[in-house]
Length: 162
Image (cartoon, rainbow, N blue to C red; front, side, top):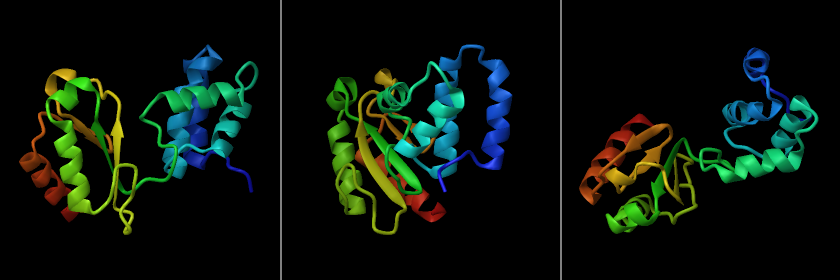
């Protein structure tokens, strides 16, 4: 069966419609609904969103929005999705050593997920906290001014939770 919103997401979608008179504005929250349902944003789900929003929104437009933002996972990710900023401000503050440390500890490379599906590590461009680098986003929480020692403590704490 083709993807469709879960019952909860359908209710939320119906509540969104009157809040966004411009159909184009529905794309972002609909992508969040899709990601909440499936854990990531895929072609089938993007087509569903384009169809639900309707003309003039096409699959190409939804795809363009989804691939522009790093907040949408384009593939399945682990229970904890670690995104480390690799943009210039964070890089100059040492984000490469943070990425190296995290990947070494978890035994994976950037873009990979641990065998137990608990962790995914990605290097992303600009998390918008340039004055606080190096920065990582783990699921929905930001961690700033990271050092190898602080990320080690964060990972140790998170490992207890998953």
